[in-house]
Image 1 (cartoon, helix red, strand yellow):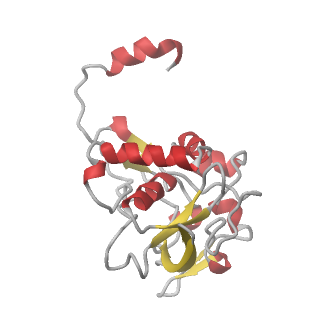
Image 2: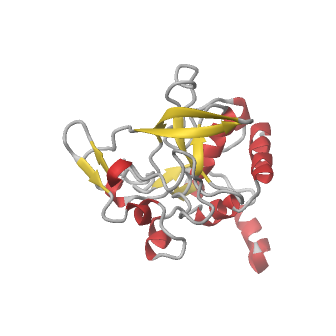
Length: 233
């Protein structure tokens, strides 16, 4: 907290505030191609391979969009802006079940766990953008953490498993059933997984980008320790 720690503690101590107050407003990750599309992105299926022990299991996963900017209620007074979410306390998260994340997109169901689970990618100190198939509460918590920011940029550690790498929709476009097209441009990887030093990264990654970047540098066991801690809250 630095040299102003005492002042910050004094400002925040013994202050009344609604539980969903501006103290817990957070800016989420933004992908302009999805934010400004005339219609929301339709769900898309992406084949992903997950490793369970010595076995590799393949699933058709519903790809979880990384854009959390929906502009809902953005013109209403005293509400979160279009790129912001109000975050509930984490106490008790280990006692509830998915859906997780601000918009409830990280789902887990016995009806889809073995057929069409939710899917995305995750990064740790050993691998970049490895396939993440949500088949357990641990998977759901890991996914919710990951989705607090845009994915890491691909590098020499990028997973070669099916469904690994920057989660670019097939062909760099999403065609909605009513005919609208979400086009991620000529270099979709730089839009969805922008390099941390890029100008786009500074404006479109979330408020949590530094924290998530540090989480991604942790070893698999250290990340698991954080997930285990969250389940004890």
